[in-house]
Length: 260
Picture 1 (cartoon, rainbow, N blue to C red):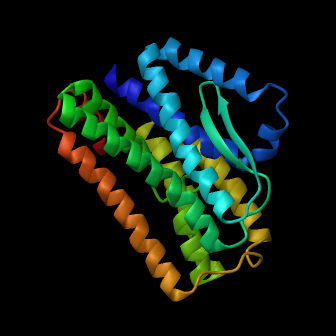
Picture 2 (tube, rainbow, N blue to C red; picture 1 turned 135 degrees about the vertical axis):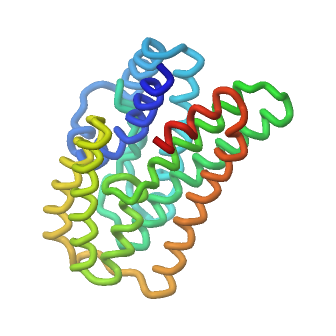
């Protein structure tokens, strides 16, 4: 039961990246943001409990707010955050990212804001010793860490794709192809439909990126190195938070799911 809940929780966070790739579809939705958010809340409450549903919604909002904040800092116009029932949420841009460096900055700010929320929740556990907060912190960290997998279109995939393309356009294309192969392998090995979606979206992005492979300014060597360090650091602190909470009932399940 815990494994099933965990897989659904992962899908909740990965869904937004699929939606972001299909941004035009999201923009064309006729249902208001409030209606979508209310329906999403009800769907998660149906699957879990209303308390866990509220945590999911707040976690998604904070993570996607990190992306929106970064977009605005880079001068990218945004359409806001959309919640979709059984899928998650998406920070939708209204235009292309201006550079590879901007894409890295925008992609990594979601997990950074997600880590900040998980850390704050962990500190609440330290203050109250209520295991519910430890479990919540661990699950928040796990979902954000999973999202840093170097598979497009996850945040980690976008970061590594921008690094690869900054090295050379052919390196970028090779990275996307490897991501597609990895998604197909995991879909077969794990038997999780989530990776089938990543496979499909990764294939679409391969086509898009091939057509615009020289349009975005590349990062210089120092920025490439800094991006790689930032990526590894955020992944490391998320893993560290989970490891610190691993001995606590409820929180241990998140680490077990991540380890497979």
